[in-house]
Length: 497
Length: 64
Image 1 (cartoon, rainbow over the protein chains, first blue to last red):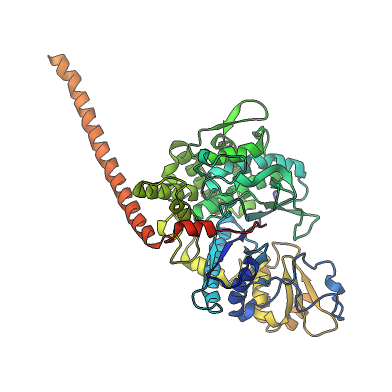
Image 2 (image 1 turned 90 degrees about the vertical axis):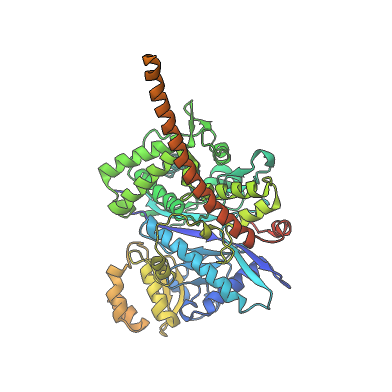
């Protein structure tokens, strides 16, 4: 039985400081996050130990000697009441969503992150001199060869040999680009002639140089081997996926997460056999992204050639069989599983007929249609600065400037769900415990982490509550307890019993 | 004569159908175009005024 596909998204946002005196992206990102956190009392808990250095405090910090997170401690690093982590990473503001129970819930938290970033920009303006502004973009590249990521995380079974996991997921990652892409004008691959790639399907394909590896900032691999489960490491692995684009289009995000979770469930259960393997996956990553017709075929390892769409159909057919035999429990249940399957089929069908049918669902198609319309109206070429500006502005999260929202694309979430997710944690994962504790006992929490929380209730030593099982600490488990315990002391006493 | 008429009739019918289909396709095409036109009007209003400078200054650090 496959491990439940708990999942989440971490997004690094592009940031601009308009009309600054002195500024750099690190200080701008810090200001942005501090502005959001400072306005909200319950959000002041650090992920790091800025005020509580483990080495200099005498009160028995040995309890978490092994858990100090590897982060630069001077950077802003906050945990929110919805269970997310909001912090500065590599000169970008980054939001790591809470652990979600299924793909649809993860989309809700991804949209909630957009709301939080938009709110943060507004909050930041109160700390800035008139005329200055922080602007956040939800994209993955500046068009000049600098890329930043939108990573997905999925809980997988530790027992699965990593080599099988890598072999079976790689063709899926290469081919899923045809519906996960956010679209981009031009190419940033150093060996490509920009004239040959006026527009491509993804923001990220230009940046992958290896098949499998540990790196994320250079020599990026299609399958990332980071092994940091943030959970019981004897049972689980966390697959850290770095090949995706950050999308605002809900159907695209939903399909990306939902289909990947399904494929990983099949891999957990050793259900996939004879997966079609690309002869040169790194080459294929780019060739798939550069082919807007979706007709191009790619050489396969066993001989012959297949298009990305062909490869997707192979995975789809396998998933359909898997669903019939094993059900969809591992991806969150029948409702979400069947919905993902229906949409996956619909999208693959349309991509085979005419990708333009999907301009209300897929981001790269919507952007392409918009840019073609713009080019035709202004009789301009792909390398016109206005076309590039529009490509960038598509991702601007300021409500007045954002282009995506004007397109009225199909949604899978509702406004009230997204609004609730800005402050409330997912009820069915351990994020519930984290978020509720932050909301209720903020002044007693020293630090929070993915798999533990540290409380200071004034005793001899700090108290750590481990959270190694991502499906424990849910509303069903601890909802009543958290409702009843007025203080952190009461909570810890109850938990200790 | 009769034979010719028989042949011509279905042809005409099929041409009529084609015309109808084309009409409805172009109708929805026109709607889509109008909707895109409205959108492009909006975009012309909110798009960065100095596109060249905006694009040039849009520089991010690599991340991850």
